Image 1 (cartoon, rainbow, N blue to C red):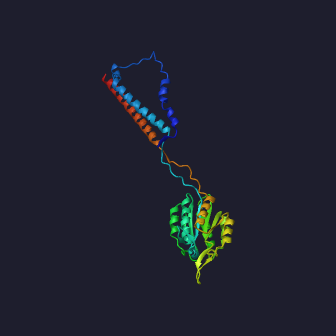
Image 2 (spheres, rainbow, N blue to C red):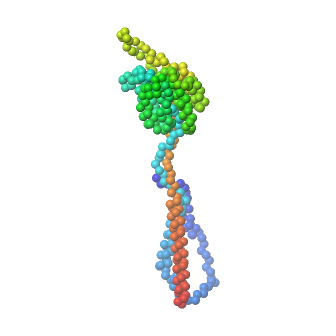
Image 3 (tube, rainbow, N blue to C red):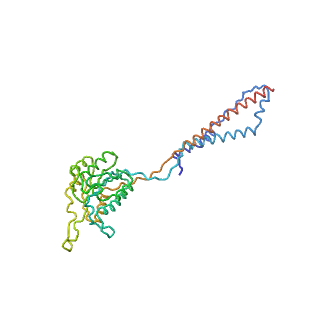
Length: 344
């Protein structure tokens, strides 16, 4: 789309014509006299048709140059298609437990029994898809904590690498403190500006490995402004076959340290959630969306390219051409007058 940034500048377009009309004619000199050696000098001025054609040609050349100059003053510009403006959102790290206990099949997904990690992948993938504008990172932890994806706006890559994770990849035990410390370190090292710093940590057990105590790690997170939402995953009741026959009920989440997870969340200004089934896990991630809403996209941006230099360059070129033509014409008339005078 084409437009003029200053369309009001076009109002000066008829200015030369108005000025010409308003200027009074010069008074006729009654006593002026011109002495010429011969009347043949007036033969140059007697060629009326040719002179008028030349004057008309110069007039239109000057008029075109003036029009281009005014158009340049009006600042023509080309407005491009609307572009999405990147939203300055949060730095959001996801920490997912890959310890051996995540293999417990106490969740349902699509009317089939699945392990905790499979349910986590499905629900967390939907959560990642909704976080448009946030820089998302992925930490996988078990006996050790690993940065799988640094903070990035590429949500598809985060989802792919989460889906490729498998139980035991980081060891069989659980290092919650190391996972929090790694999140603090990566957010601090990258120094990426964001309105909020958030960690969503999901685990099904207690801290059984690692070098950093979870509460000490939470203190570090509090110091750098990292808010932590902790999710304890696992059913509270499950039927298993008994060795003496029949079924018996067990608590597959007996090792879950809810007290520590609650303390971590409260210390950093977050919240602790308990996910007992897939529906509950989905509700928790939706609640996190409400607590940490995605920033609304800004109004569409249209790139603007200024094009004033094209008419301005054309005006200068025509003005230069007009000067050259006028000079050449004057020189030609002088030579012709001189030749007539010599001949006379």
